[in-house]
Image 1 (cartoon, rainbow, N blue to C red):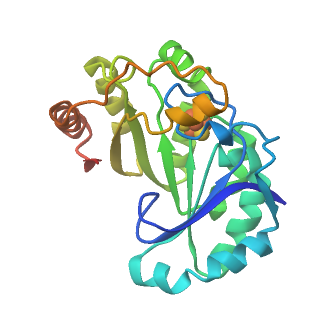
Image 2: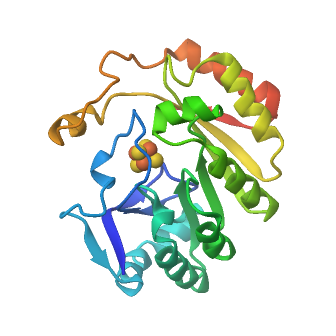
Length: 245
Ligand code: SF4
């Protein structure tokens, strides 16, 4: 069984084409900008258990749209690899029915768990939270060594990667840090694109509802000019397509 926070159909934000996105419950990180703190706890009473067969019934409804658009299924979270056995089972069925598979993950997970899904995953949407280990700890509560090792493992397995990096003024937008991030990405073999995501405070009300202390109330989103400049910087180092919304 998989513990599911929510399911979104007809998404165009989480990988190529039109996708069904399954948000799995549970996350070991505590990112200061998290938009979905209600996904953190595995004990969330509004999460629902599904078998892989039950989810496939929902996923199959999207197959004509996946085929027409180059889409498929994305598992996100939370951290979907906390439920790696379930993702492996679900994706094995997806691939047997020619449904493309993607995982949106921070990669803060034991490598043994990641290895379970490598053979059945077509694309990783890999979130680099911070390139600096100590700043990563400040931003997310955990350091980044495991994430970085896992990112290289995915590249070594020749699986496509889209990098995601949230630009948070004062936390992740230092040009030297962005340069270091881009230099690391440049060493990977299978990165197809890089998405720079401007910080916004749309999830802040959820923190308030859960009685959590949202530390970024005073933080403003980055300007369009700053996003453009950082995108140009990353592209100049990686020579990869860089997108920002
Ligand atoms: S990894 Fe994602 S779900 Fe987990 S705390 Fe960070 S932003 Fe939130």
